[in-house]
Amino acid sequence: MAEKNIKYSFMNHWKTLPYKEIPNFRDFYYEDKTNYAYYQSWEQILNYTLGCGFEGIEIWPMAAPYIETFGSLKDFKDYVNSKGLGISGSFCGMGPGHIKENIPACVESVKKTVDLVAAVGGRHLNICPGVNYGEGGGPLTEDGIRNTIDCLNEMGRYAEDHGVLMGIHNEFFCIMNKDNHKRIIEATDPKYVHYCLDTAQVSIIGEDLCTFYDDYHDRIVTFHLKDTASPKMPDEVRYAASNPEIQDDGWRWFWEPGLGVLDFPGLFKLMKKHGFKGWATVETDGSPDLLASMAHSSYYIHTVLDKIYR
Image (cartoon, rainbow, N blue to C red; front, side, top):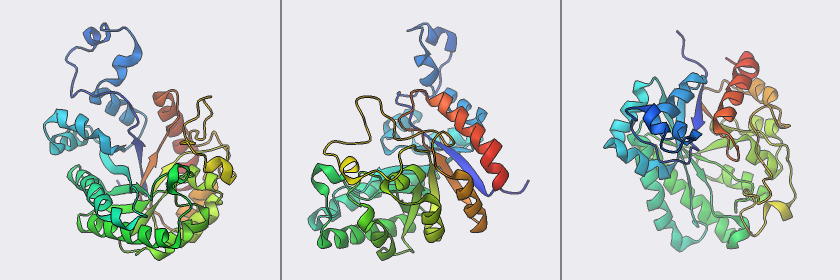
């Protein structure tokens, strides 16, 4: 069978402490008689991932304590692989690397996540390029822009040396805002600093999704696929003092692919045009039901998008 152009992974947003195995699921269920038991086992979670048609998972850097329940990162990798799944990579934040004296500590912190990704056989480290704009970070000064570029280049060089592709993953509330977003992409070293296109985040920032991909396809090595119904939000919303991604009233910035307003068919036509090959991760942060989101996303991908670019 020919290798697929796109391999889909699911972001491991499960917020429970997984166990390696549950010897008797029925007995385990009776501990609290809720659906909590269905999300307390790596076996169950990986079964759902495989059953919904995904080829892998993307893990959080804070997943390390969970992984250690297997004895080692290699044992975790082997267990995931034994299910017929891969690990696409992980995500982390750059930290306050826009301040020159902070760069060494930020680089050392990211190196640990690079090492984790390499140990589990991942390919990507997707990195938020800074702190929140509204929490004392923004706006970036000229020195801050140069420091951010230097910090990303150093991190990316370490990642490249360890077989990991580090990609900028911008957030709509990140210190890297729309005004300096493209400038930093273009000024970083393309050999070491790539790009993870989060379809919703970039659209909320104010970019046109398809135009952005068409312009920067040569830097984009992976995706976080999620939808939004709130593109092109004003600065006063995106740069709120508190983290605007979490809303007390339950407002959702992010939806499953196909449930918002983004032009995913248009994006996939461009991915076909430019010959993209590699991992694309479905991220469903904000979902009230991760398993339903997983199933819905898979249905949309395999009945709509894969018909455009298999």
